[in-house]
Image 1: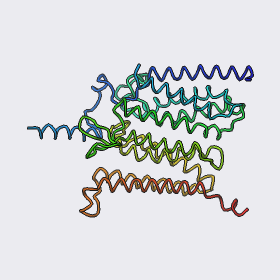
Image 2 (image 1 turned 90 degrees about the vertical axis):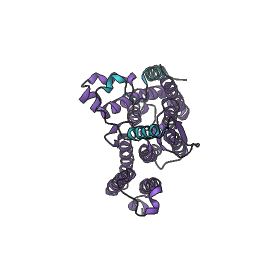
Image 3 (image 1 turned 60 degrees about the vertical axis):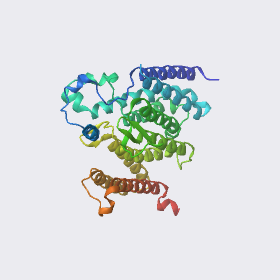
Image 4 (image 1 turned 120 degrees about the horizontal axis):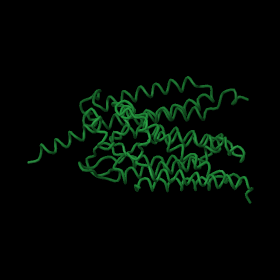
Length: 65
Length: 305
């Protein structure tokens, strides 16, 4: 049987865990591509990796009959 | 609400449940508080590290400190989450763990399984829901590829998930020499494997110019673990030298992968990337092996006692 103090810790802890989980559910988005409202501030230089994709897309378009 | 957020939130609750199962009966009452602190601090630091890494956008271009709270626009970091979870455990130990009869090292060891589970699920969600975690283009589709608009790519997120599953399972059940060793070695192997996987990733997540920051942080994590184990054996200089050597060689290999260093023989040219990545794996394996060797090697004074 848990003592009163231990029960309080367990209950408060459960509330904290549920709040943390709720925050994650509401806000978690593992997205690195920022929305269009930020893009006007970008210099326009492609990052590493993006360049390869753009080049591949261009090559595909050029190879099309 | 997004599927990603819902599933990640549920995973956090599942990890909390796992923590309850692994903690001994008399101390179980602190596990919800412990898990809650880890989740809260993990989320906070995950956002903080991303926001700081992307300071060019948020602070230099947008000049808006409140952009930290624009979480729904995206931007979280696994390194930050890891930092937050470790800090959460320290706080939980100070607040209630000590009083519940748990040692600090013991608490870190109990965290290995839930932490590994969280990372595995998060990587799988990146692959399945976010079209992230893809690597270089592959010639044909297979078990470890993901098909995107331009063809099959290496599924790095799946590789990361499988690796963490193996490392997590190993160090959940392995008996360390002292409390805390399981987490220490889990972090070493996680750091070393992430250094490779972040190099393979092509989704341009958290870049400083051409540097994958998560790759840098992973190597720093492995180096910190090496330093801790080496200090115990009085071999800190070895850890410093090995870490610098490893960083130097990996930097050269990154330049080689960019095509700035050529392979020595012409017949190797078509296999250049494979050769460089094989060397990459070899260097990291030797580095991890050397750290484990230092861990296992007891001080000479103790051995002869």
